[in-house]
Amino acid sequence: MKNGKGFIAALDQSGGSTPKALERYGVGKDAYSTDAEMFDLVHEMRTRIITSPSFSSEYILAAILFENTMDRQIQGMPTSDYLWEKKGVVPLLKVDKGLDAEKDGVQLMKPMPALDDLLKKALAQNIFGTKMRSVIKKADKKGIHEIVKQQFEIGCQIFDAGLVPILEPEVDIHSEDKAQSEVILREEIEKHLAKLPEGVQFMFKLSIPTEPGFYTEIMKDPHVVRIVALSGGYSREEANALLAKNPGLIASFSRALLEGLDAAQSDEEFNATLAASVKSIYKASAK
Image (cartoon, rainbow, N blue to C red; front, side, top):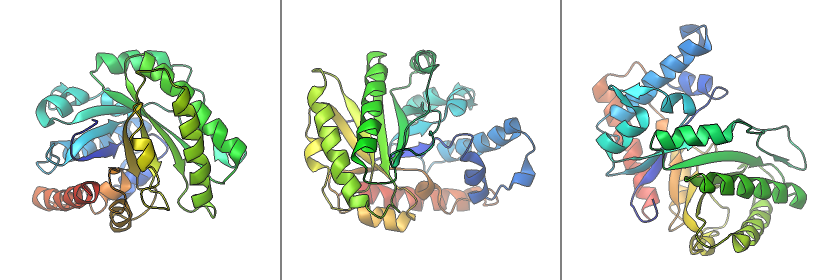
């Protein structure tokens, strides 16, 4: 995870974002009537992606899974084992339970009372690390401090359980003061990194910064395994262009990765579309 080439495929749409992901894939809400049917359909989509010859460790370093996906199988194997043993792709797990209401310009993560049990299950499924997301809407120092504090506290809990956490304090790309939010965020991250015990290691998933190279110094911190970038609502073309301006930053794209894929495509069309997406994101991540 620290030195490998490639990018992270984010395949972790949860209950709230699954309908939109399916709709973009050409599967409307009329195709299912229950959550169980919806999750069956999204697992079919993810299985098609993961088993595609275009989904290869030549370009893809790791994949983030939703808990429901981790609990299922691909070709008779647990999803995480299939990723690692058949594809050579590191399995990661989304652990947050969504966002609280906005306060002080940010949305903190909802409480995770069952986190310890989920981490034990993840370890039993050979998961390497986790991901958890909160969102910064405004350049509010108090709010951003609380977001980073929460991310680091839970990150330490996850690391102590034997997994490497990805902290994701996303800055909304549509925020009017995005650049100022990033300045405050970087300061808070640096303060909290300085307090970490020796040997504790985190990853970060951050919005592509307004200023190229903005997180370069943080990448050098001994506590940081890697910094990856979310697409945040940019198109794949926009996200790739911005990412390429940031040496050392690799992609962890979801919507941008799946752009153009459709349930009605033949396997040949599907694999060709996915291959073009994967190669373009890899190229942007290799700068």
